[in-house]
Structures are given as C-alpha cells and as structure tokens.
Length: 109
Length: 118
Image (cartoon, rainbow over all chains, first blue to last red; front, side, top):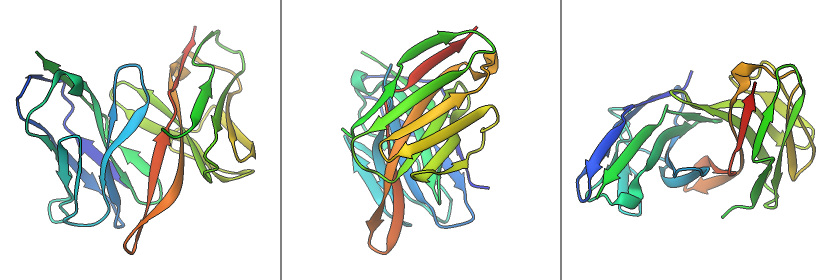
C-alpha cells in the first residue's frame, strides 16, 4: 500500500540555520504530495503541495520538489525563525491521504 | 480558514463508557474524515465519508463507528472506550481540486479533540 517515510527528529536548530526534512514515499499510483505543519496546540495546516513530477511547492520560505525518480519530496528552508518551531508532516494522496510520522522542529533564538 | 469545529475539545472518560465526538463544517465539502494522532504514528485514518450516509473504514477502524446524516456533521462514536483509544482526534474535510489534468484531494483540519480514557 501507499506509505510515507520521513526523518523522525527531533531536530533542533539555531535561528537563521538551514532546515531540511527528508521525505520519501511508496505509491502504486501517481500521487499528489503535501507538507502539513502543526503548531503547538493546533490542528494541521497545509504548508505546500505538488501534484506532478518536477513541480516545486513553496510557501512561507519553505520549498519542496516532487522527485519521481527518487520518490522524494524533501522540505527545505534557507533561514529558519523561532516561529517555525512546529511538527511537520509529509503526506501523499492517491485516493486518500497517507501521513509520515512527523518531524518535530525546534528553533532556538 | 476552513470552517471546521470539533466538540468537545477535551474529554476525560472511563473505560467501558460510550463516547461521541462531533465534527461540524460550514464549507459544504463532500468528504469528511476522522483521524487519530499518536506519538510516532503521525495521523492514522479511522473512518471517512464520501457523502451523506456514505462511509467507509480506514486503517484503524476497530472499536469505532461513524455516522453522517447531514452534509455538515460527521460523528465518531467509541461504543465502549478503552485506554488504547486515548489520543488526539482530528476531523478533516475536503473537496477534490484540479491542477492541469491532475485531480488531487486537499484536506483541511479541525482543531482536534483530546480524549483521555482512564
């Protein structure tokens, strides 16, 4: 079945550091890919998405590129802020959403 | 923000008691979902609905039932709560979106219900 594997963390960074969260997937079809973010005490919010190979999703300084050849959708941000502290989930959607386990990111001032 | 509310937001109950969680939407979306979130597991789908009175099981449906009698409401019932059902429960809604020739399913999440079963 469809599945998502992401680096588990936790990840702790200093402000202005570079962030990468790895995500790889297994799917029998041709899924769309998503990154969701969950801030403390809140529900999940869509951060960005990509619906086909080589698409780049971007939002709030975060980027991820849909790589079909490596079945990956790694999340990157060039300069993180304290407000980026959250749990990040990679997900794929074929006929339903399948989530990775989540990566907790803490950014220190 | 998508109009999704969940009630109650917090609940503590005892093993063996029935519990019903409610999800209400004002977006008139066709699809509604119930997930549970547990450390190390991400979100796991319990049940989902693709229309009024149309529901199906997800990957962790044992011990749960759902009902959808109106487009805007999706109820999750634990018939006899167990300690293993202590979790945070999220409702989500979606409609299909289209990007070029691709159809995708973007979901919007409610604020969650924290359930503790003692």
